[in-house]
Amino acid sequence: MKRIVALALAAALLSAGARAQNGDAGQIDGATARALVQKVLELVESKAVPPLDQADYDVARKRLLALAPADASSVERPAVYAAIRKLLNTLDSDRHSFFWSDQAINDYKGYGASVAAKLVTVKTIETPTGRALLILPPPITDGTPEAVTAYVDTLLQQVASEPGLAETCALVVDLTMQTGGNAWPPMVALAPLFTVENQARFVPAHGERWPLANLQSIAHLAQKSVKARTNPLEKFRGQDFAVILGSDTASAGEMVAIALRGETGRSRSFGLATAGKTTANNVFDTPDHGHLVLTTALYAYGQQPPLRGKLVPDEPAFGGESLASVRARAAAWATARATACRR
Image (cartoon, rainbow, N blue to C red):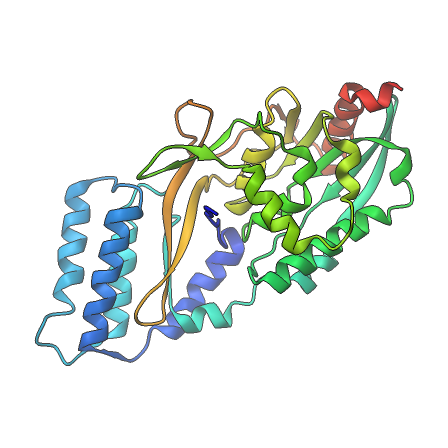
């Protein structure tokens, strides 16, 4: 199964970036340093998006190679790591490619399933044309099978236990807390919303476009992570739905947003422009036990040009408009459009 994982970003990643220096100290033996440099260059040059300026990349590449000469018995880890990051900053990835030390990854716990579960919001919103269900899937940065299962199961249990669920006829998906992490768990939970007509695409740096909301891939993940016999969001299959974006919606959150907006003609977005980290990353382990978070693809709709920068909602928030007001407008649109609200 093809998998591109949009990893931690925004405030969470910025704080982790500062702590990344904690794992940069000391030295690397010469052989490992040379293997690390060669692995990074191999991955960048075979899988990553191209550099903004080839000359800048060539300079950064030369400097990186110079730090791990063939005759060196050991090299300074901080210098090598800094040079790798400078190389990554030359890529056309909106500075969304990173190199993390093993210690930094271990230090950064982020949002595991247990933390994410406490942040789930499920509520109903009354409108003149019916009752909408609002679901706010929190971020999750833990990608272990156990964590994904716990996240999806908890989220769907909370939906199923919402007292007014039976009376709802439309859905609003609020992505304002999706600050980055792993996009696949919320997409698994939202699986009933995706169809074969979905227009969201990955645009790999090397290769042909392929579906972002790949139904086969999502179903494969769902088989592993959904404990409930039926997803309570099945009642909204085929219905129009609203999506709420915020300025903190970033990286993995933007991937989820793009997937939902790929249901062209069935979805409409409300709120604020997103953070603008709309590139897709893969994570690769390196010989020094580091982790290369590398931008390997962009996103697009169908055969349109790749998306870049912030996602602008279809219905922007009014100046100073509260989130509650945006939610109410989104719910009113969803209930007015959903055929289930007209029965």
